[in-house]
Image (cartoon, rainbow, N blue to C red; front, side, top):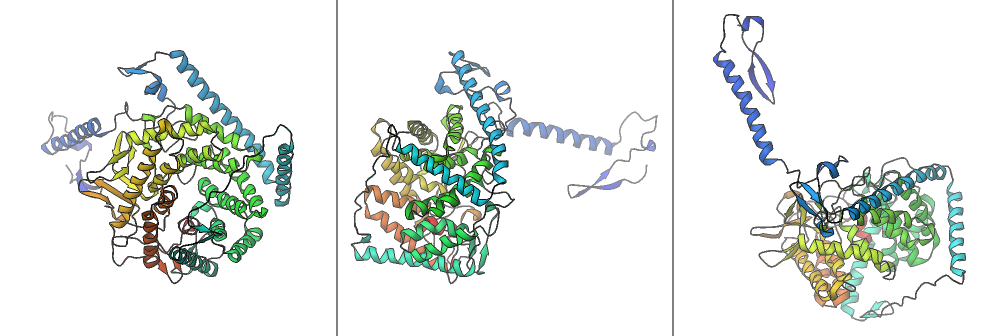
Length: 579
């Protein structure tokens, strides 16, 4: 037999059998020792593979990770809240007729959404043929229709909403000189961020404050969409920086153009651009923001309809649709909110594992993807906008409130826990297991619980206000236990580790607002001075460790006494954190 050849196998070089005719003489009935050894190796590998699959692959009866469109047949499941039981892998329904009607209604909604998509495709083709002036003329026509509707005798006038008397405010200036000094400091930080963006990154989406040039990410589709300008407008107006506001307004009027062929995150465009423009219009009353916002909104809505509510950045259609509902609910005259409501109604009727909404929704089948539920990244805005849809409707949108209450009860039952050290945290549900980790993004929920306390079921307002306070305390601890007194991106609650980041890629701080947002809500609802103090401590830490000569930058490790910068001044730093 010839000498064995050497073949690479996953980086290793092993002898390979020569299977030529000379290797197996006709008179030999047994295998050579080396041949037996190779066959034994193959058999061992096969047994190991089977053993691993048996013990380590997910149990498909518990986890429907992949949507093949056949789960109702192959993987029986049931919403136990509807009275169904599962026996031996098959479902026994006490009310089979109701279940059948439930599925028919789901399918009807899916068909309605598909029909909306087809109609939107034709509308989008026609819309793309029109000029900016033609679109603005259409918007003016729609506005005139709304005015005429409001003039009708049977039209209900908008309810008066008196402004509350804010504690410590006198004609827009705090009476307390200490508070006034702190507020002026934050205004100076805003000026520093804006002026450097104006000098080094004007027109670009964001700023690289150390390199002193523009910065962009692919979520906006184009490097010069002026995301920071649009996002920061309302903050400038609130702070009385009217010259800077007019600079931004002028740039938008002359330069903001969405006629680009590129992929964008529908969710990010909706909250930063449409939301930013509508907020600026709401504060200033100047219609250039409203007109541009509606132009973007029409385009954005067409994209969502055509893509089946698939958000490119998060792949979660429910988060995108809820953000669209929120903004279109504000622009009541264009009739688009009704289409978004089809999505909400479908979500409401779908069975949910343990009452939780998974982050992922298949945009083609309208069914859940993998069972990962988070109140932080990918999921946060969905719950926030359900609550705010109810508030924005003057508390008449009871469907939104019911969906919020149902979701919060499931979250409290399955995701909220108390650590050994007494810290209340919100974990993440992944394929039937609770991950004892909380993200910085999740810290917004403290404020949400406080905001939703009034109007909660069973007179539990005090309970949810207390829950908001506990979340605020936990998130403050995540800041206080770092060297820089700035919070990490995510922190664990395992063993002796509490409110501390473990992985290196979770130790960064990118100028996020969520913790300060919860402090703000808790201050507004309780007027406990500790929340203002905590906010001021965060302000001082940002100014000390994130400020550079060219603006503000995120830091890569909040546990390091000499951190390195990520060299990005995020648009939301001006739009949210400093506000």
